[in-house]
Image (cartoon, rainbow, N blue to C red; front, side):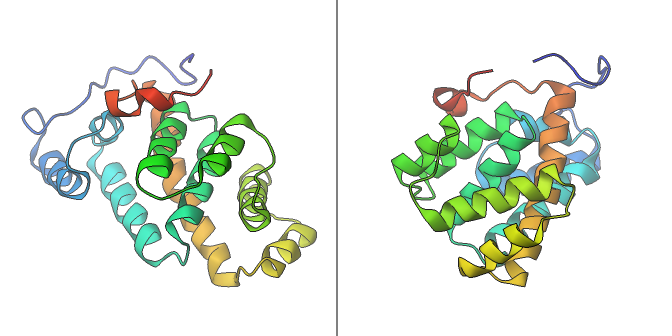
Length: 190
């Protein structure tokens, strides 16, 4: 992946090398996920970026109104639309190993094919259009979203997820984040 910004002089931060703010945020991250992903080590260069990400991510997971399967569909739609192979691989692993996304649904998303579940396809399409149209979803897409059983609160949930993924996807582009070993089996074609 070619760096779309500038050659960064920032290096990954560890719990040993970080300043007090960075160490505090990394401690929260470690408690939440059990290890420090490469993405977090980069994002914490400006501690509020990782702190905001962790908070928003947890809020979406816990209060966004979506099932674990729907959450991964949203996160994959955002990550793939934003061209973030790191998050695409990470959420593919989470979809497969933790969130219970059916294999045929995950394969369809990763291959850019029709999702074999109409409600999940509607959620995916809505999320993609939200990003591509900078939040201005067409009335037809909005009506289809609601007809599938989603509400205005779900719209806000997708907006929250889009905000969180903007932080991670854009940071990964900036740092050209190296895929963690645990996500490597889910690497996307570049």
